[in-house]
Length: 275
Length: 252
Image (tube, rainbow over all chains, first blue to last red; front, side, top):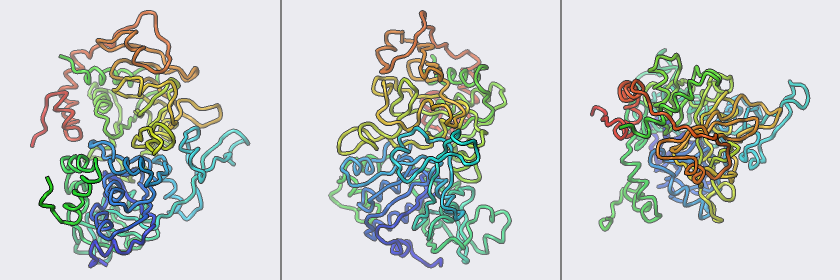
């Protein structure tokens, strides 16, 4: 289970799959996003849990993505996500806007195996007006006609992809308090994880590590990818590389600049003529 | 020399402590919000008992159940105050964080795509009060009517809602919001601005007092706290802000 390479994980993802990705502050696998680009993935549908960042912009720029469902797409301090913005303008991707707790709630419904869950708020937002799959019902536990509430359908992604710190030989992975990754692992049909390093011993046998561990029950394949979240941060392992993200944001203002960036950082081909 | 950011932080702190508003026992501050974060720390360092959950603090993240915990807490009514902004804000306090032009903004037919709604379509309903904060005060941001409503300023009777905007703070002025009338009233203008300059920079209609007060400067005590202990708390998360506003560099 551990012996997989990152590129082998990417090869497990069929074109058109719905992929749940955590955002930049919550352990995305940038290594796996790059491997999907090398693999030539197409027509992927991305789900930002609950928002989208660097890895999403990379996949969009590389032409791997048909649709994004998210609550926001941003590079944080480095500004708007340039390839997302360009693809939207050119009509190359569809965006289905949600709002953060709605994405969590749809995944939690899948986690529980129930068909839908209610959520407060949202009524009167144009997000609801553009989501024919979301319904407003009359709260059946309140006097009739007094309490409209939104119902959200369960959402089970084809794959959850994220980057954790540790994996053991039993296939358990540890990522500490970022439990939204556990939610997507529970809700997704399959879960592919990259990790920094192997942990000797079983993570679930350690009372201090077990609460931050996701059981192998939910994990389909793991590969080691050192610095696999870079340039975004990984807990207290390494910080957000603001200079690298800013350099990416500058390069990705144009498709040509983005393509040069891909050559260097994804395909490992430094063009000698590049400025 | 008082920095504009220091004045804004002190003004936000006074709004947080407004005795006529619902109490602020637990405040959450979202991403990329150094001035609201400074205001919250100022309130704390003044000795008020307030819990702060700073969502993008790298160490000491307050949540152990992932990012959904913020929304679960807010759903229960445990978050008293949140800050929101928007690419467009209109005179009824509707917020647009999605984009201008045809939904979802920024498409082939024109308009600008903003990052997205984040949690606004939920948080705006579920916190007892929201302080709207947007430094840019211009007719393109403060519009008569938002192109798309990410989060509505008020809701019809019967729709569950704990609160609305308390105020709108910009780089030029402070407005109060009256949810019963769904209308802003200008409360004060920052130095260098007057009633006419605010009117010219604001796309929506609002009420205005006969005599417009100036937004007060921070007191010496507030400035000392901002430049000392507040800055200390913020160095890790907002190093660029601390260097620019307080002239402080983080230790290497």
